[in-house]
Length: 329
Image 1 (cartoon, rainbow, N blue to C red):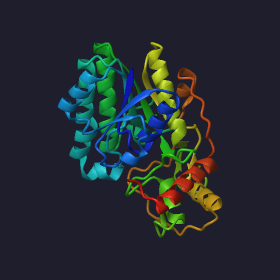
Image 2: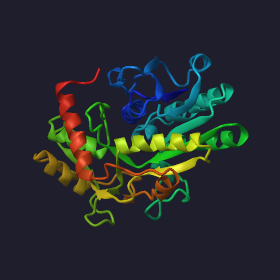
Image 3: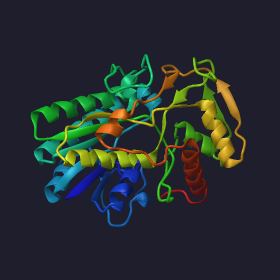
Image 4: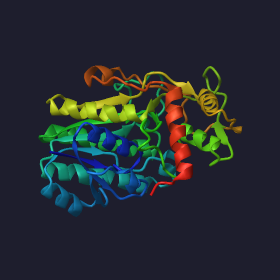
């Protein structure tokens, strides 16, 4: 039986592909390479180039290959871009996901794991954030992901179909063995931006707001190593294969680091200074966004192995230095 990974040439998708291959799974990747890179796909993985919203292609793939599960990463993820191009985000993240879900039902693919986001919560009134809290996204990106969660919930009720939606907090780092990392152009995630700064790809790092109600005035976020996140997808797959009920799960470590703490860690690990420039807050940025990931740990028996900000930064920096010498293809 094969696991189809959509967006498997992207950042989180490629790490999940590696985790699946490492434990002997049969993997197929579907990717249009809008942000992913063919070079990160390991040998032995069947690669299909195309769009996840192409129903004819999905029907062809699913009729020719018996799929045990789909792990769905393909989509757009930049929050400010979703504000300027909401219809593009609803099409790529929601409409295309609907086509994929419908194809799974038509071809009797029984399991689906979805790459969701903490953006479904919007600006939570309290932290840490639990799965039971109000879902009130403040961006088209968050709304497009929440709509897909609703489609999965309703499809699971109506068909022989089970799902897990993993709500990511802040993902960072790179494969400890150096096989993959974040190579996306115009990345906006803080740790990626900071390691670009210390390797010369950027001349400064902007801090958006230093007057939040936090210990040092800068925003606090829950950072999770991408390899630990990949292992959460495998835990979700095992959970569904055992016949257990799915649902939504937060993915984080349950504690936060401020922007200044992250920048201090990057400077310490790299031994290089960052030109830090302070600016005003961005609209909609909460002071703190930290997960309560106890449901993930307890229900899916997930135990992180790389829960250390310095380790996350070290792996991200190592990958960034490699990119400076050998850009991805």
